[in-house]
Length: 181
Image 1 (cartoon, rainbow, N blue to C red):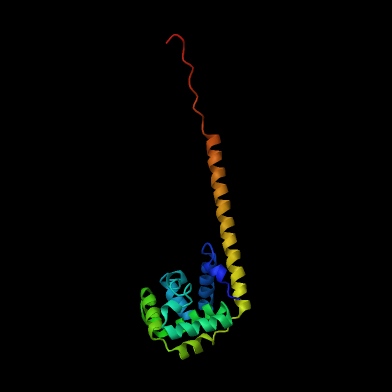
Image 2: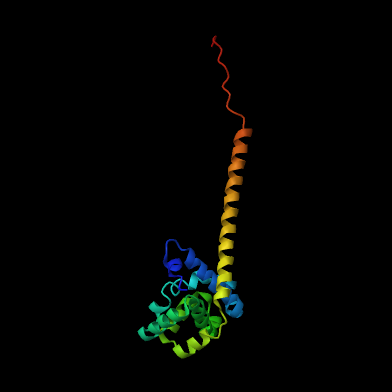
């Protein structure tokens, strides 16, 4: 339900998977923001890391952070993606009007002054279900597995080519020295 071990466990796989989910959900539900950021090569890996691991709590005033933790305990990990979508929607006009490199400043400032009622209302308008997150999770791990397989095949091909090159190179043959020299 909470998937904290996946998010905070060894490695960064769960964290990267969650960023993948947010990225895909933003493309689906907030295509204008997603396209604006993607056009400038700003993906979730740029703007999500300060928020996801802390469940937004480290970025919010104490009362707002406590409220988010309460919601997290009731809703589970699905709320993280929805909160992020809600925050992007809350800041949509500012994000679209600014250069993408300003997104962290915009999101951080919004967390300082956020109207919790409005943010939560926006958050809960996104129809993100546990099932949709599980589908994205499977998709992510299949993508990771395919990338690893492709990398492994490329390494094997490179090793094979190097071996062929060694086999086809003429070996150094020392000429016999004549005893008369």
